[in-house]
Image 1 (cartoon, rainbow, N blue to C red):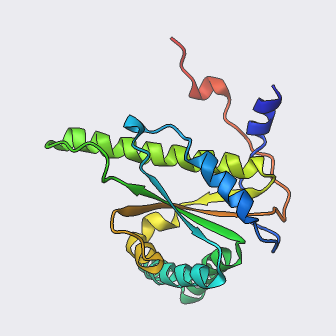
Image 2 (spheres, rainbow, N blue to C red; image 1 turned 30 degrees about the vertical axis):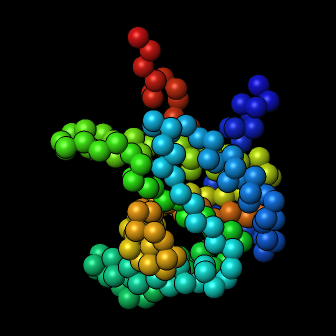
Image 3 (cartoon, rainbow, N blue to C red; image 1 turned 180 degrees about the horizontal axis):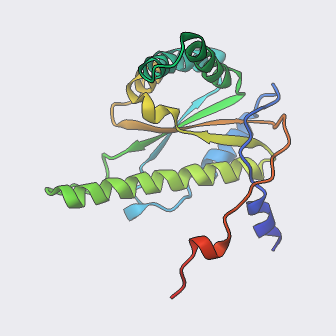
Length: 199
């Protein structure tokens, strides 16, 4: 029961102290993340770890251009666009540790028809997401905190270019990680009977 309590206690945290995450903790987190289950055991996840201010700033600037373009297409006022872009940029640059989660399809099975090809891609996405959850639980086990964000899905080429990723690495998510500087909020969960069907 203690382990269930630990798992249920994980929360998304968006504000961090300035303390750096030790290299040893980063290695443990990643070593646990890659133990996630995956389709055919192909392990399609890839991780790009950003520690330096320069790397984080480069990513933030690259993503900001795409974010600004999308917000302007939403017909938001210029002042609101700039405020939201700056908030996004600040979150990346100020995070002690940023990990970009990517997916690599190159070792997955190849099918000639769209139905099976789509299913295979979905299996790779699910496998990569499993590694993302495992990573967050590993962060929690270190006494650290993190949050899963999906910005890279909206700016994949900007992320790939800024981080000089292999063309096969498809950006899927971005994690901000560090020592928490806020208390986790109580999370309202849907009752089991509304999300479970037992036959």
